[in-house]
Length: 622
Image 1 (cartoon, helix red, strand yellow):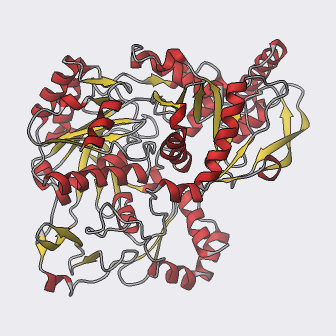
Image 2: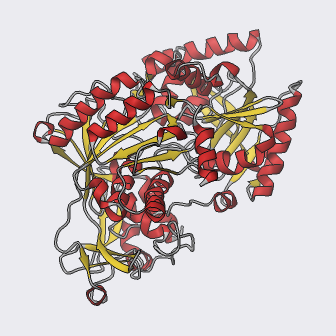
Image 3: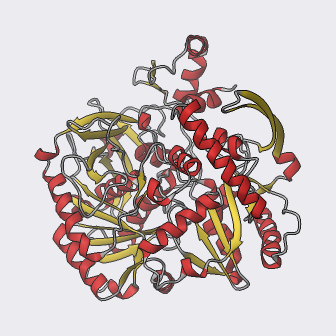
């Protein structure tokens, strides 16, 4: 295995490897991961690893926004991803063309006697469009591998050899059609589910199986289930008939949640594409209800489907954080956040979400969702957060002559970022008057925890504190045991820190007294932006899901773009995430609340996709 592959493998296991300022190799590992064999390999390859870390690959030509700011994705990714210690990582990709060239997908053969001609035709068109976009479409026979595994049957305690056809780990997506079981098939499902429940309770004694093991256990009965060598890398995309009820703009978002979640679970898929003669819809765990005319299928594939395949929704492992505690009772911003969430209750923009046990009825399905959600007991839609004022140490800016004396930082391009003798980082950025050399501040914010009721936040248990100080920090409320209480950061944490960092670098007035943030799964209408210094950006971005470097990068770029177009004096900004929703930030909480309540009351802000076309029209006009 080459060094890059070794470090990527270590990162997946929570092991952080970096070179410090003195060029020494540093390793931080969770308990139990660092075996003697692995330790010996690291010692033997120490020089090779250091060479790789100290001399990273040159940054991509894909730069951050307009070229005059010059930040590469390598630099931006390290900043917002908390990879400031020089460890290896994959920079975010923001060009769908580049995304496509890195993807491999396969199409599962149609079931016998499948007769939906509309879906059959779209399936062929989709294969052609993916190929034309640069995606590698791998034939089913080459994308799969025959395998055998042993399963111990409960009660009789006998082993059985089961054969399966597994999709190889290198495949990014498997595209299938929804399969409807016969009466006999439904009976097999019932038997398989009862066997699984018995096996889980009495044989495993409630120990958790991986997704692949659960799939193997029930795959003999489930026509929609898929055996995947690596469920974290291979997404399942199912083509099905367009659900007119789900995409109905008159249906409340709260009622969409169980429909959408059960559709995903029923089809054992991460993405469901609804197909009719005239329209297409796309559904993932964001529960967007985006609808596209079939005449615009090229844009659907390039801007929506490919980005979702490239960056699947995955919560960030807690091993990526330095974990500490804080006292929410002593945090003014935590108290403000509780007030902010409570005041948003009347808008209806932050629905309760769902408890997995309430929405997903079958235990095998619940265990699959639980595994993929990394132990989260619920999923919520939207977040509230409050960025604290940026923290600087020493000069906010330095002169060009001082910049030339600063030292390089391992993993960063020295033309973009350097550090002073105190270890403070400075970025070289283009301003309206020329180059400036600006300190990268420490970013801290308080946020609602994942799965919490955003409009009934409990100060003592529902608010976590996130930091971006070269690496990622997570501070839990004092007295809360994360092994007992489900206190995990929001999926959208990259968005939060990116918005705060972008505001600090490009629009400091927006965040100098703290910056309230809210994300909801809907959009404002173009008519809502009536007040002075209120702007919108991001409408034309590729629709990457939440919880990714890419989502953070796009929000950072949106802040930057607004400043380029309108100047840094911004009072309110709406940063759109297509197929996902909207982030709204402002320089004052009361003002933000007033504008949101007003917008909802005037029906100029709604959950769902009703107002998205008007934003696209506004962007096209400008």
